[in-house]
Length: 315
Image (cartoon, rainbow, N blue to C red; front, top):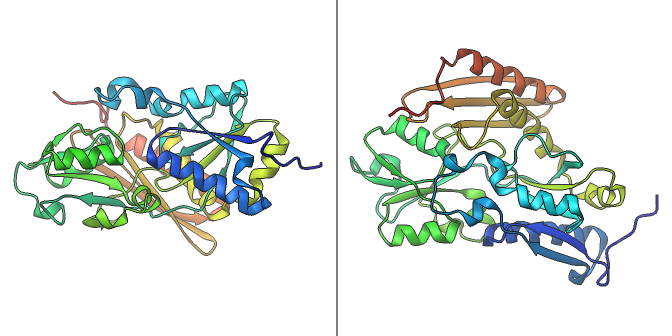
């Protein structure tokens, strides 16, 4: 096929959320496309779309629904032709895409670790008994309470800038952010300490950016092909298969990380009770071509091991 490149008069429309981090990810995608095809910036248009998760900031995510909170409106714009591609944080993405859409391009993965942020302590161990820690992530809440059940964890929603402001205002003495996001914003220095995966396993697909397109749009598929990172794809194949086996959403504390060693993928995954009182872990390794099979198998093992009501909130 003859590849049709975007031009200033017919720009490629890139859909994204409007936070500084989301825009940084959209701009990274644009810049990689510019570099791959030697195109001017004017050949691209970044289209900001507000999602339900962005609009509703006064309620916990678990009350609003699953991961589609941050993707639904963007995907609707993609299906209707309002945009040509959508740029997502992969940790926000449901496992299945709506009919007519596909997600087969992943940018090179950033730092997968969580960052401990606090003006008062240099790490979790230094927090005083009963200290107030803010997070909107059920995974981080459960992992923290599993380590430190004495802490008081409060809802802490908003983008990076909003959460940092809440710390300054004393709403909490500490919070967590993804190192990947801080690095993309040029703010990695604010992390008091990156938390190693052995101490706090990250969210599924943390640090990865995915690009979604319409099925059958062969021209856009060809444009995106040079951007896809094979190793990120292999790692996420395992992690997202694990998530799918557990039917994971924003309402379930799930963590996982796949790492590559030559032709082998090493995987560790865990599920936690929302109150942090119990954590179940599985780990294994397999050839990279069996990454998805490994993630699925370990996810099913954890699902079988979890007692009835494991993910239920306790009063």
